[in-house]
Length: 372
Image 1 (cartoon, helix red, strand yellow):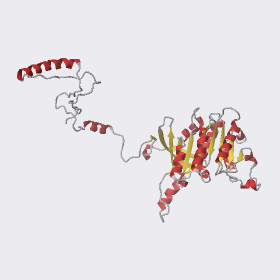
Image 2 (cartoon, helix red, strand yellow):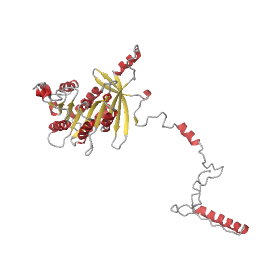
Image 3 (tube, one colour):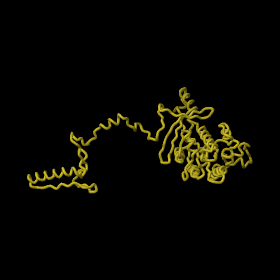
Image 4 (cartoon, helix red, strand yellow):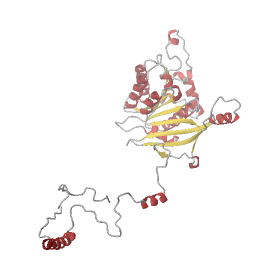
């Protein structure tokens, strides 16, 4: 499933559509958001280097880590950093977010990252930040109709200095830019109100939520069982992903992630654990599906007021008769007419509607199909 996310970001969007967007949500109970972000970043970088991605470059907007962190990350994952200036740019919003060091003429740029990174000296000005991202992306792909991807390592840091409406506008503008192939970002969901998380999820075509394996109660004295469960939560967790398709359908999938020294690994969740890949269904306390036995039993149920027939063929009057029935009716009518004339000396007019276009007569029974 994690591979599905990476392939979706790799393939980008169709012409005239918004770029695929991924929100990675974590919390203090399952703090693996940066590991998942690094995994997606590495996979997308490999696709770009192999020429298998729609995008030809990657712009990393670094809020929570320095540019040297991402350079070392790429090195550790076996990616050639010497040629990285041709396909990656790092917009440094970490080193000097308010421009104080620039005023003091303090420079903290390593030679290794100087060719890859550029400073953003005012993270509160999101319009300037948007322009800087686009400029960095176009610097990678040059003139033409190429595409580039955008990775924002922590939107929660942006929300410290700007409103959710401003951040949402920035992300929406990036998605709708015709040269942005895909975009993904990290969010610490437990730091924000529900409405903030809802807005960012609405802007995303994919939402990856990290949840703990075990729900524990922290702070109880002498509860060694909770400490053991808490230790498990810092080694592995649940990885829930919600995909929004182009046709409007939503699909929810789940995997289990394990954090190791070598990186992060994803494994499928067995049906024995009660969690299976499924389409989005409302969370209710009863089963929405019927077994074969239940369907058979339901067919045997007699509905109230339904015609039972009483051993005779069930005939429901529909206001008209077929040709074969009409002949029988003519015989019956003529016989009944003779009997009526002989017995009472009075006649009766019998009329059958010729077409469904005619309105029913006022004396017809609308509940003729019910035993009332």
